[in-house]
Image 1 (cartoon, each protein chain N blue to C red):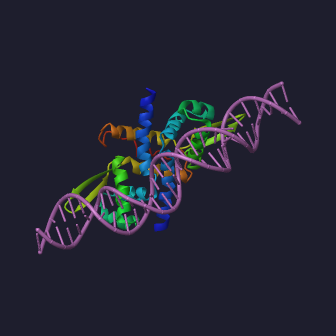
Image 2 (cartoon, each protein chain N blue to C red; image 1 turned 135 degrees about the horizontal axis):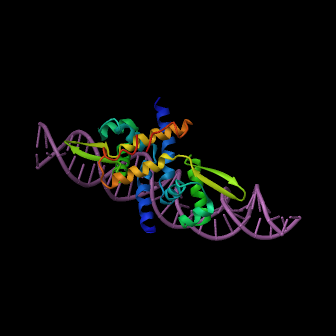
Length: 106
Length: 106
DNA sequence: TCGCCATTTGGCGTAATAGTCAAGCGAGGT
DNA sequence: ACCTCGCTTGACTATTACGCCAAATGGCGA
């Protein structure tokens, strides 16, 4: 009952926490356009390999991304496409558009 | 160009980071049903007054909540209703529903 | 088998966050 | 003027997150 509600919030919070970092959002945005291997993402983010790899691990364990090893490279793709429309909604809200206009979610 | 992109991700990340805490998600969920004063939220979350107040401040500075002082009490309300539908989308995804079925966002 | 390539992981220093206690502060009532 | 109520804020400690370097892993070709 109340414990399961907290449990639910914990699971949801894990996703938000994973997304709560600029570099990780950059990665997600990039993957919205299709899967990429780690090397491409390293160029994009501009951090070291280990840092990017850690960011990817965070997103993966939160369930935001899925990975697949093909040959030498590991490819990541977006497992939660709705993140993209949610960020679009946030951008619209920041620009001051009223709620009725930005029917981005639900 | 690239700097503004990072800037944009930073602003978005601030919202996600604010939402990345179980107690704060509980608060948001409660406020989805309408505005509440702090005392009600303290009962709901089960933490101390100062803790709840800090959580509310985090959500407010991120733009997730708005507050209004009326008489002795401060009332908080949800400024980003799309958070609710996004969490619904996350729940659906966790239950394993395919993307096509859960048309929750966008 | 050896070495290279793409990626992950351990360890570490530093920075940010969470939570608590106690003090502060504004609005109203007496 | 004083007190109380509802809430916020300062100061502090403990925990957690970041980012890097260096070392390890695992797949593949020579």
